[in-house]
Image (cartoon, rainbow, N blue to C red):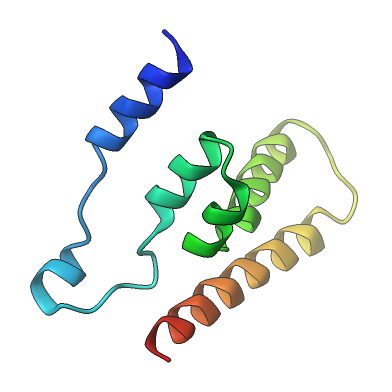
Length: 99
């Protein structure tokens, strides 16, 4: 399957934000799917503007996967740092949307 076809399929199956649909207010996770789609298309700057935490969540998930198979020194500190960075980026982005 070609990458272009996969990207088109991904965009067809994106979930709507129920919080935005029912209450008219974006949730803290709004933009995550679109950011991932933009990242796969190679539009890095646009992906960062859409949802900056994508760039800490992906390494976090990758590190957690690797940590399951290998004994990594200071793994807990790395995981906590990536988690705190992700939360700060999500909340910071959410606050900036309202300003």
